[in-house]
Every structure is written in C-alpha cells, then in structure tokens.
View (cartoon, rainbow, N blue to C red):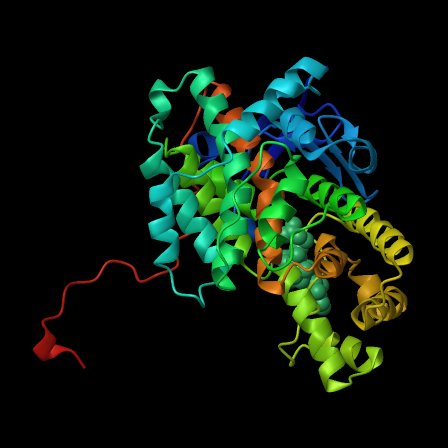
Length: 430
Ligand code: CMC
C-alpha cells in the first residue's frame, strides 16, 4: 500500500508520496514541493537528503551492515576476487565462469596506457602528490581514448571504457610511484592476476625482482573489495553530479578522484597514518591524543574515526582489523604504529565523548597499517582507495544513465546576501 506524508505550512497542507526501498528505507518524494508550496528543503552537507534511488549498495549504519547488490561485504572480502566484485557492482550479478574469464581477459588487454601518455607523466614534478597525478592522468585518458560522447554511447563502448578504466588506473598508479622514486616503469603482464600485477608493477626492479607473496595478494584483494563502493558518498555523488551534465566518464571520475583526495574522505587514510607516526614521534600517550581529539579548540582530528552513516563499528574496519591481525601474526610483523592504533581504539570506545557521538574506527583506520606492511608508501594510500572505488564510481555513472530519466544535478539554495542595490562608482565608494 502506498503511503503519503503530509506537510503543513501557514494553514495549508499538502501530501507527498513516501518512497519505500527494498530494505524498507523510506523517503518523502519532495520533487514537487517547490511547485506546490513555494518552499525548498535546506540540508547542509546533504545530511538527510536522498539524491537518487539506487540498487547497487545497501548500508544500515546503525547495525553496521554493508552489502553490494545484496551480498554482505564480509563474504565478498573473503570469497570473491576484486574483478568479480567489480563485475557484480557494474552489471548487477556475479559473473558466470565464462563471463569472468572474458572480463579478466579484457582487463589484461586494456592494462597498458598509450605510450604518449608517458610524456605527460614524466613531465610532472617529482614532488607531485600521486592523487594529483592520478586525477590528471585519468582526465587525460579522455584525450587519448576519446570515445566519450555520452549521447552516442552504446553498451559495447561503455563496457570498453569501464574495463579500460579499472585496468589502467592500476597501471597509472604504479607508474606514478615508480616515477616518484626515479625507477623505470614496470609494464603490466598478461600472466598475472589483477592484484599480483599491481604489486609487480610497484615493486619489481632490476636490482630486486619482485617475488609474489600470496598473503599480501589476498590482503590487497580484500582491501580493494571493501573500498569498491559505498553508495552516495562524497566522491560518488561528485561522479554522479558531474556525469549528470553529460560529461564523459573519464571527466566524471577525475572529479570523483579529486573529491576522494580530501582528508575528511579518502585522504583520511594517509592522515590517519601520519597521525599515528606523529604520536610515535612526539611520544604522546593514548590519553593525550584522545584529549586532543575532544578539545574543540585544538584543530587536531583523529582521522580514521567517525562516519556520516555508520553509527556503529564500520564493517569494513572490522574486516580490515581481522586481516591485519592475520597478516601480522602469520608473517610475524611488528609495527609499533599498530600498537598505538589498537590502544587508541580501546580508549576511544570507552570514552564518553566518542560513545555519545557514536564515533568508531572507519575503513581508513586500519587500511594504512596493511598498506604499510606491504611496502606501499603513505602518499599512495588514497590512490589505493581510488583503485578500489573505481568500479563503484563506474557502476553509479552507469546506473544514472541507464535509468532513462536523467536530470542534471542542480540543488537550490536559500539566498542570504544583500538585496538589490545600485552600482556605486569607485570614486564614491567608502
Ligand atoms: N575525532 C574527534 N571528533 C570527531 C571525529 C573525529 N574523528 N569525527 C567526528 N567528531 C565529532 C565532531 O566534532 C562532532 O562533534 P560535535 O557534535 O560536538 O560538534 C560530532 O563528532 C559529529 O561529527 P560531524 O563532523 O558533525 O559528522 P559528519 O557526519 O559531518 O562527518 C566525518 C563525518 C567522517 C567527516 C567525521 O567523522 C570526520 O571528520 N572524521 C575524521 C575523518 C575521517 O576519518 N574520514 C573518513 C571517513 S570513512 C572513509 C570514507 O568513506 O571517506
């Protein structure tokens, strides 16, 4: 039975339909609110605004649930590969063995980047942040592979662009690292899986050939899967907003990468690790750090804690914490930063400030510890997030265009500036 919600204002009342999702989430459809009442809604930071219906990812932030197309994240992280998770997100179903074989084959065929793009890459300053390089290079893909007019795009062209982005982002990321350390690029290889290929491009060198480590490959696979989608987060909403103007997929995803870079979003993984290092360097106690995080006059923020949607333990952080424990114990790794992180978590979870605000570790708290164990440097952490998020961005861009009733994203505002006034010549201004 359909439901309505009533809005009353200045003695009048109007009914608006309530939209119900498959998990019984409910939202008032206010698309006609302004036409009928003259009012808009005001929601700073979109804290309570549903920008779309979506069938890709479900989150229950109170219960700590995350599912891609219905599959729990814990199960996918344990049993799936990143390419099959990417396929699931983009096309809606897990691939059959044959579909997966073809998808993997296409990832391999599309792993190289146009050689001319290397001039572009080598021209960037050695100090450039890898996220700046990544966003620029992804935007540049549109110049080298210009099959992007959305209006003309058929399914085959989209498939080609999707597979190309998922594959090339990994090559670009590894090349940008090699450039930063002044080593020659290591090209992708057809005989390696998605994750092994990336680690080989990062760490193989003339002086020390890379030898595959199955546990690190498994850990990287799980890391990419837990980052693969997170419904209407800041970067995905950016991809949708940019894509809603019919901007091409590369441009839309370039914008998403820029949004992800921020320290309140994906950039938090680098910040969280820098914070742990800073704590170690300054010899701060966990109590001092928690006190700093609570002090409103102190600009210090405990990155890797808190979330807009999760008001309980982030399920991705749970997966990663278990993975850290397994990798560290199996390989007998000792990292003092892990001990600091564990101590901070323990203290924060008992602290009234954190309890009241429902602040728990998020995905960025433990991911850096794992990357560090694999030898991935701090300034590459957010790039790792971007490699993982690529299928999610692509899936949302596709869902938005497939829906058929695409509306350009264009929020309203409540204007608070001066009312009309006449121009004053400069001689008369005071
Ligand atoms: N340390 C200390 N206090 C915090 C923290 C934190 N990490 N996060 C939130 N708070 C406080 C905040 O000051 C506010 O307190 P008060 O009510 O007294 O003003 C309250 O908790 C609510 O926080 P908010 O910033 O209003 O919540 P939000 O939903 O707008 O922001 C957030 C969510 C993730 C931006 C925020 O929790 C934060 O800045 N966390 C640190 C950065 C971080 O780890 N980001 C990664 C998020 S997960 C990966 C991703 O999806 O991008």
